[in-house]
Image 1: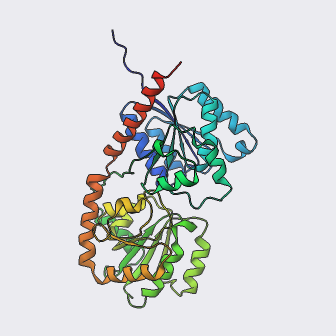
Image 2 (image 1 turned 90 degrees about the vertical axis):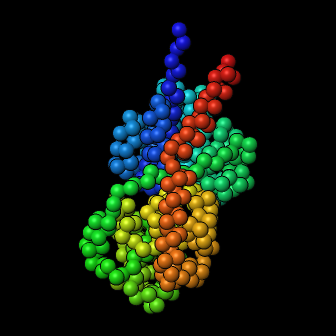
Image 3 (image 1 turned 45 degrees about the vertical axis):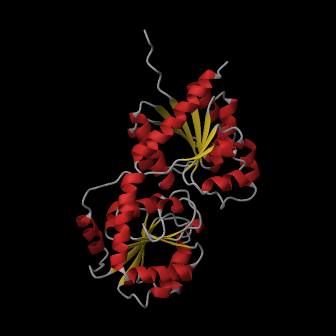
Length: 382
């Protein structure tokens, strides 16, 4: 009598579980793999945790262990992670984000893990230079490195020691929400006293240097006078909020720029926008841009990294150079003067997300990679 195949055990080791694009990707991945019979656990190295993210993971029957930086600094966290791997004996340990790569890969191998996978969520150009030698030391331990953007791989090979033959690209995905958001969109605009005739330019992203909100504010200042019927809505929070608020005041745009903070109703907010802008300096494959495209919004984004996998310039949106506020302003001005053109791009963008970047395709791709690695490890098992 044939024995039923055992479910694959997958341990995700992640830097943090705050609310953001990586965490959204992890939730989609975990949910999809759970439907395919995987047993999964998550170890979070940082105490930066959002309750909703943990709840989403636990709904997929995934246990979440929070180690925290104090425990790591006291070395207790190292032992806790080592024991977690040894006691559960996962078939695969997957490290996510740079610190997890540095720490998780060697500890996984020390604990006897047969398969180690690393997930590259972005081109890590923003990291301090001293971190790269540490990342390189353990790069060879990864049996496979999965990048969410094609442009992420060359950087990782050159600067992070990733072996080219072990690196592959699997696109991110988002579930398409087909519910009518018009009522919710009207409600939040009404709450903020934004008239129907006012056009809302929006951005979603953590208020951090690499998202380049300062460039967006500089660009908006260039066109604000020519477009008095516009406001700029910034969704997200982070360490640069006070600096950005000060920049807004200096630009005399306090009545035109709205800081909406961290929100859990982004889909409703997107439905009430007219133009989406994402002037990031580096990315993996940004969920914020994918969500805006899925909502049918015209998108202007920096032509970097995973954005290049999402948008063909002039077909699904407009691409601009990063750190180029003047060019960004020109493209925003063009989009506001040509709403029909933007609407056509929005339709094409929504169609692309709904057909090419689906959770089903993403989950199937990861599942195929994981199963191949596990099968190879069983063949070579002593």
